[in-house]
Length: 91
View (cartoon, rainbow, N blue to C red):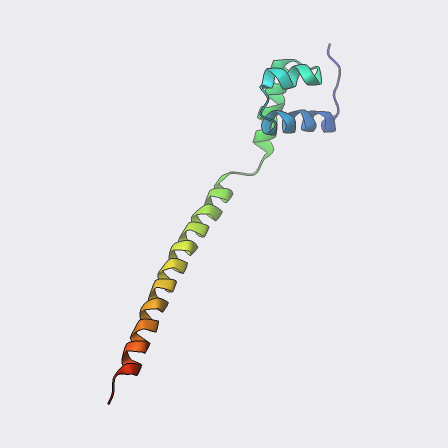
């Protein structure tokens, strides 16, 4: 039977595996655990993470707000030009 690893140890191994750019084989070897063990820890960690839908909702909202912002800037420019035009007209 294998050695029981602490929660902190597992979390650190998963963090390194997901963010370091190293192969999972290399990370498993560096931490002294089996490849399948590290893979299982990663799967468990991903199940516990919040749904990525929340992130995609935020991205969609940012995209919508950027479009709205661009439209408002264009409308403002048109109004500036119209103001200049009508101010130069003599009654």
